[in-house]
Amino acid sequence: MNGRSFRWAKSWGSVSAVFGGSEAVVVMFRSPQQQDNDAWNSIFSSALAGAWFARKEGPQGMLKGAVTYGGLFFLISYLNTGGKRSNLLEYEEREVPATGNIK
Image 1: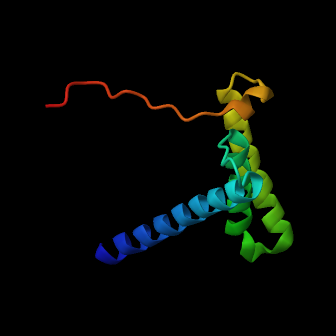
Image 2: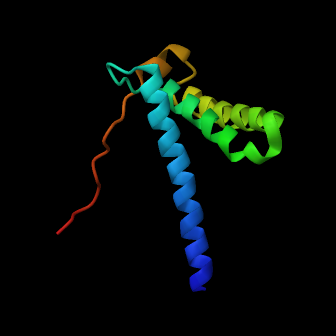
């Protein structure tokens, strides 16, 4: 059980590193001065992560991975904004207040 838990943790850490690193790279290249954070950064970084995960399948597999991950995130973002593409540029992170009483 201990060995399996370590493998899961290692796998989860590498997935988190790929998504976090690709997000940082996209933000750095897309908007180096203002550090804008819109939905397109997440879409492009998801496409980059999809290409990375499929790197062992060659260029065609990387393209499929990029289209799959980027397309899925675009679809989720598009549906989340009510189907308005212009709202994808107005992405903002919102804090949701916690419910319940904490003592």
